[in-house]
Length: 581
Image 1 (cartoon, rainbow, N blue to C red):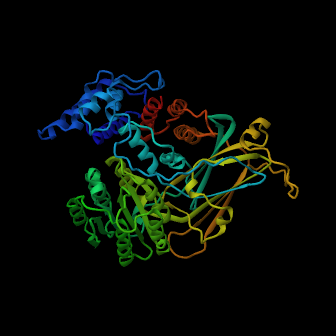
Image 2 (cartoon, helix red, strand yellow; image 1 turned 90 degrees about the horizontal axis):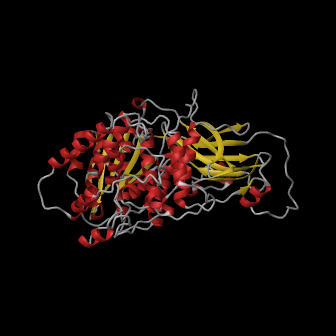
Image 3 (tube, rainbow, N blue to C red; image 1 turned 90 degrees about the vertical axis):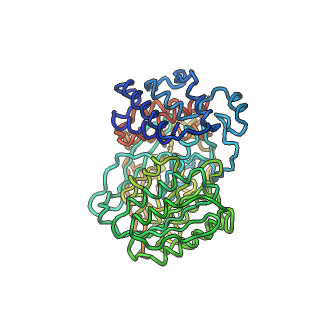
């Protein structure tokens, strides 16, 4: 079964039919559409000897036990066809011995790929810190979404739970859109605040800070020069058809006057196109690409920056789009070497977007750090649908920078908050003094993008047992005095950023929050997603976090879901709950 076909069908169903599991108006209609599309897909394929994967898929389709696990996920009321489709989309857990015996080279369903050298950067969780000794929390902006698509690949396509280090809470939460108010006048960013009881620990509070940037008129955005840096080495062979489609989709979305250069590295580094404005020529070059050879990625990155500088558009949008599995094996290949190479180009006004893909050999650690140090963002393409989400539907936010070196700082009031911890953003952690130091780089926020951060806080009036469980009791400090201002403010939130290009001084704004803000629908959805992430990480700070409870919360607060992303998340949670058993 073609996974991309299934993705398209499910998305079409969700977007056309009030995308809420439980509200499918006609099971028969879904079944007719689904199986008609399957027959059409089969007719397109030439007759040939079946591959082991085809036979495995046939066993999955013929397996009689396509039943949903009501015991685990009784809150999901999907129609039988949707449940069966979800089963086909995933790997079935039945008869691993039979399948493994038939095809020794085939991966056993429910297990990790046989060839698995994927790499993830290990980061620990932040503990609670007392406000009396650490009132400031400082971190950099991050609107990457690679982690969620990668998680979806593992759960729905490989039938396995992700390793804890592959779950980055901020990327999981920021994958979804929220209904934040737009900035007014000439404001660049507008914050939004909400709070409620933490679902996994009701004695604590969960604080949401959402930041919205203005949605621009794309026709008024500056001209662009893109350097498509394409990894066409042998390790990309399995996903290269999708790579060609993805880059063609991006090329087709360019405006008149935009320019494209193309660099490939597969065996050697080649410049295939320079400063071309003809979309048809760009697409023709992409269509002829094949995957083969070793991976001199470091040399490819150097050539891409050289081209970006050669065709640089002053005041324009100058960006390298690197698409790779992150497996650099010739020349500069270590994470440290690659990061230093990109870091040296930060002040050139050239941005680096990295789109990861592939499985078994995916190097998430290198992709994430390249994007972080290259003033850019990171994505993971698990399907053509995700490629369109990144390069077509989300092109304005993902490809046009609004502000760089965006930093956030929260000052908590000890009269209102005893302790806090930031969920995620471990790779964007900053010292408090870095906030005002413009030499310290940080993340980039795109045109019309949103950013969401969650803090778990312990109120100042919480029970002593709750406080002692979060922060070990310390001896009283001899030389410090507590400042009792009597203020009822909860916190002050500060944003500092620089313009996308140039050397103008950074701008800064501060916003005071008078007290605990009420919960809203934005908070309800973000809280459910955060609980799911904490459960997948097996968080020591949220042992009661549950995939089943997160799914129930998410289903109750789907809200408007025109893209079907939230409904799909429910399917993902259902499968993850089954796997967790």
